[in-house]
Length: 395
Image 1 (cartoon, one colour):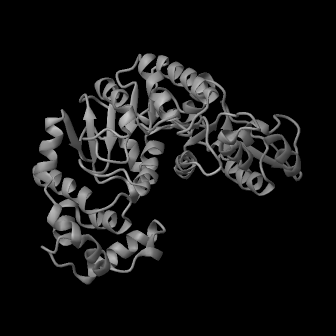
Image 2 (tube, helix red, strand yellow; image 1 turned 90 degrees about the horizontal axis):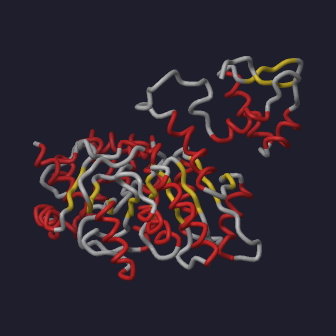
Image 3 (cartoon, one colour; image 1 turned 120 degrees about the vertical axis):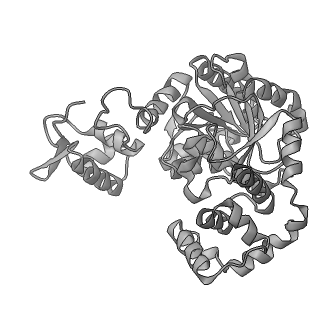
C-alpha cells in the first residue's frame, strides 16, 4: 500500500498543476490511490464524492472556480498518456534524490498549515536528512535584479542567520535568492544551511547561471519542488512555489522588491499563514526598494535591518509550535504580530483610549478594537471606565 500511495502521488503531481484546488480536494476526499483512479477514469465518481469535494472547496473559499468534477476530468485528460511515475522515481534515484509524501517522517510538518493547498508530494534533491522545523527556518527573498546594496545586506543577513543555526529558505533565482543561498552556505553551522524551492523539476537546475550554486545547495542543503522531473519553470509555477517558501519559514524577509515584485507574493502568503514578515528599508529613490516600503506602509511587515532582529521575529512563532513543549508556555505565546504590538502599547497602571493606542501601536482604530477584544478574552487587556490597560497576568 505504501508503494501504491507513493506511485499515485508521483503520478498526481504530473497530472495536476500546483494549487489545483479541485485535484487537492479530490485527494483529500478519497486518498491518493483512489484520486488517481478517479482522475484517470479508472473509477467512476458518484454524486456523493462531488458533494464532498464541493464542501471542501467551499470550506477553503475556492468553490467559486469549481465547475464540477466532469470539467476537471476533462482538464486532466490530456496529461494521462504522459504519466510514468516509475520513470520519474527512477530519475530521482539516479540523481541521488527522492520523493517524500505527507506520510513520510522526512515531510516538513509545517506544510500542513497550508490546509487544502498542502503539496501532494515533494521531489527532493540533496542529502537525506531531517528538514528543519518552522522555528528554525527563515525565508529571504527579493528582486532578481538586485543592487549592490541589496546584495550586501542579503549577504550579511543570510550569513549571520546561518551562523545562528537557522536555515535560509529561498527560490534559487538570480539576485537576492542567489546571494541568500551563497551566504548561508558560507556561514553554515546547521545540518541544512539552506533550502531552494524550485518552480520547475529538480532534475534540471534553473536558472542555468546558478547551476554551480544549486549543486552546492544540494550537497549541503536541499533543493525541493512539487512538480516532477522534466517540468518547466513557468511563471504560474513560480508564483505557486512561493507559498511553500512561506510555509516552511517562521519569518519571510523581503530585502529588495519592486512595486510589483514576486517577492511580495511570498510575503502575502506568509501573512495569510500568520507568519511574520520583515522588510529591509532602502533608499526612497530606489525602485528596487519600493515593494519593501509598500509592505512597511501597509502594515504587513516589520522593519528589519539585521539577523538579530529577524531572529527575534522568529522566536514567538517558534515558541508557539506544538512540538516545542520545553517549559511552561507564556500567556502571550501564539499572539499575532499586531496583537503583540498592541499588548506592548497598553499601559500597566493608568488607562488609555483607543485613539491613543492607535497612535502608540501604529495600528488602525478598527484593528485596535478587534485586538483589544482578543486580548481581553485572554486576560491580557482590561477595560476600566471606558479606557484600557494591561491585565495583571504573569509573563
